[in-house]
Amino acid sequence: MAAQEVQPNETLASLKTESETLKTKLEEERAKLHDVELHQVAEKVEALGQFVMKTRRTLKGHGNKVLCMDWCKDKRRIVSSSQDGKVIVWDAFTTNKEHAVTMPCTWVMACAYAPSGCAVACGGLDNKCSVYPLSLDKNENLAAKKKSVAMHTNYLSACSFTNSDMQILTSSGDGTCALWDVESGQLLQSFHGHAADVLCLDLAPSETGNTFVSGGCDKKANVWDMRSGQCVQSFETHESDINSVRYYPSGDAFASGSDDATCRLYDLRADREVAIYSKESIIFGASSVDFSLSGRLLFGGYNDYTINVWDVLKGTRVSILFGHENRVSTLRVSPDGTAFCSGSWDHTLRIWA
Image (cartoon, rainbow, N blue to C red; front, side, top):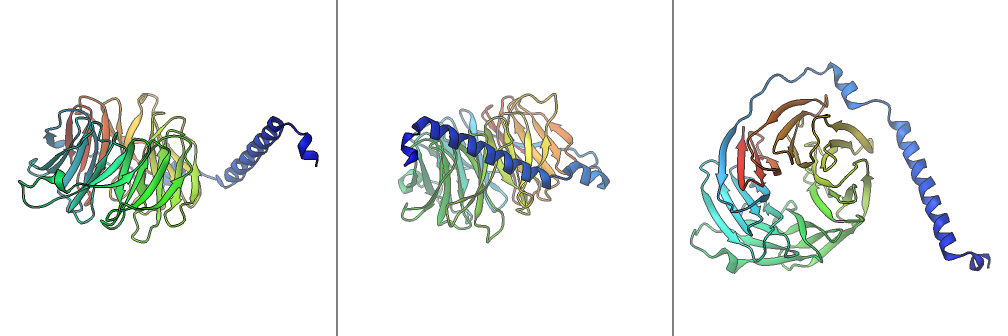
């Protein structure tokens, strides 16, 4: 038994060096496949012309920082959550407030619209995800029908319904993601693999897609299989927290936005980063990213109060949008692609088109 004479810290050290060499080998193998950059492939693609986007609506009503928002499938309604503990459902056309719920906690960091449009989910520093059914009766007390679905051991950072109202996916500051049954509140699957807080998640766009991507404070973006609970791909090229991840419309790639002031594009089939969206002049982190419906544009909301619009293929910035008076915290393109909504620490949401 030679192993008994080896000091425990020695074996640990040898294992560490072994894992490091294996990591380097993996990187070398990945580099062999890295033959050409995306912008080189896209050189012959026509450049995008000038396009003008303006603020078409401003939604005012939150008493503090807007932290999260989501569109309803009807392309018209929006749910937003804020640091003041309020969750508001808006009609984006008329700017009317249709429902308002006051949560028992402040910092409601996550909110999501159910696919049917009949419920919203939200949560934050209360460590749980609550689902509120919405009814047509304006006077009804929504809080009375609240259902607590998910329980984490730290704050809820993001939530999203799967393709039905029956299941909800959550990510949390406890370093895990989890899939829950809405009716029973039962934990269906948990996802362990991040070494720090998970800050964001996004579901693969296809109907059959049983994968989702998450990003966190460990600078990693992980792709998960929802059925097995396994992490199937992992990307670690950012230099700081990943604040936002969003799938490309085809589902073959995803973008991420990070505190390192860059957005990046990862190709799942090539298993590597294919583009970096950054400029010397951009020194503030990207808090939120989303693609246009075609996938040609990437919208990024930044902590310097601006929204940068990137040409996904060429890697160049095609526009910069001003209007918010504090950092942009959340940004989502509407389901029909005709507009997008941004939420900010200036207490407002803006609809751009």
